[in-house]
Image (cartoon, rainbow, N blue to C red; front, side):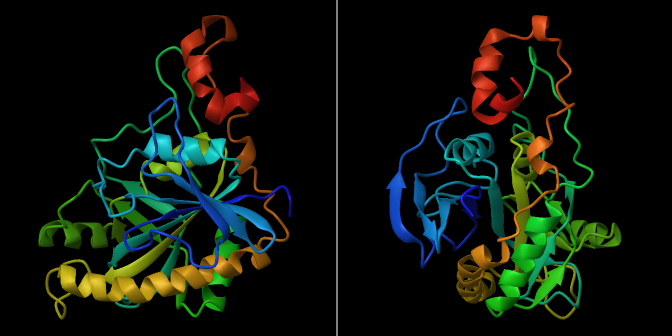
Length: 286
């Protein structure tokens, strides 16, 4: 469909998209600086698609240094309407095993060192994050992931930690007791920024390990993670390739109207510099 442009943010291990036709890397810039890397423009079937490696090619950004605002803004500026986030996570549940995919539907944000909003003094807005992902896009991703051979769990809570270190045993046990299902370092503030940018957003969490809570698996070993990661990347690429087929019906979930009643600052009180800065992500309501 001509009105859908798929965006893919690739996490650890996913630095390109096999099967992306006519791929061309193009530099981008935003009012929040450059994104993690150039954007890879191309097509998946007959749908335009744009890929961005979250950590940059060569993995040069830590979870904290990822320029989240620039990444989301650059993809929005490139015409992306539906954004699929792919990331590596640890599991808090026996039933969610390394190699499985979780289509996340909730988050607990424990990050503390990141800029979390496009808005601020001079132009204040509050978006609803009660349901932080697009249900329709998430369902399409689940179907595409199964078509690509993955074991998929639909629904799950993602605990976003600051990192870059992995959890202590006490933290791992605590987050598990809270009811979280997976743990990662990169989906916040990404998900909330995608909502502010009025993008349909889905989070696909690729399980690499059991974090440190599991009595039979011990602490996280980076060598084990990398081994599992390679298999996950192949399944993620197959999911992305199958995604257009499952997006034919589009998404009418209201994600693209998230700012309808969110801006609080009166028009006459808005900072002109903030208006100019925000046009890239919020031009529809400004």
